Image 1 (tube, rainbow over the protein chains, first blue to last red):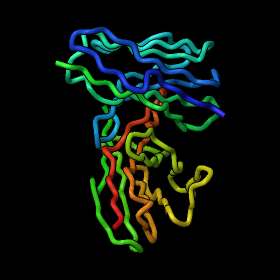
Image 2 (image 1 turned 60 degrees about the vertical axis):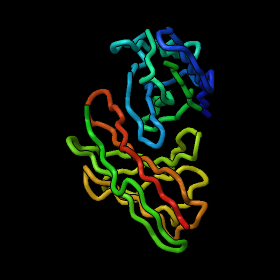
Image 3 (image 1 turned 180 degrees about the vertical axis):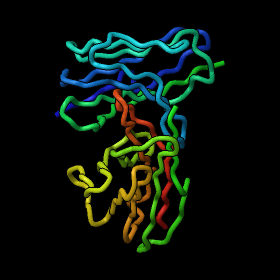
Length: 113
Length: 116
């Protein structure tokens, strides 16, 4: 059974810092991995989608990497801003013909001004 | 990006009543939609997979007679919480999967259900 864990569970950093959020999964047979952002009381916003054949994806100040064999993905946020404060979730989709995603436990990020 | 809407955004109801939540893909067709629930400060828990034109597939531990799902068209799925009780109070989020090569999943804004 696939299990997705995110470390740290919570993180508080001063504005301007570069930071790394970690996501690990127990079953490396994944189809893709997606990073999301969730603001309090809101739905999810997709940040980056990495296919199993890809190593990384970049969008603005965000960079996500994927090491499928070791069951790990990292989300790198450069020059953090207070507006980056949110919960970040990673989710993996299995290779079986289902589109089902298994979500990680989440990292609550707070960027201090 | 693709847009998914949910209606209502929040609802308060009395115990014992039924509540229907709609999930719509606004600018794409989705043969598959998902329903999740999220408790405060917790991650999303998948409840069921909604497939257009067929019965929903429920996750283990989810009561299919309590959480009725209907995927009547390629852009609409509904979740009906029947005979709601206070323990059903939660944040319900739907998602829809695009039919292109990447099958990306887009999420609705969520519905806050409070059962008194």
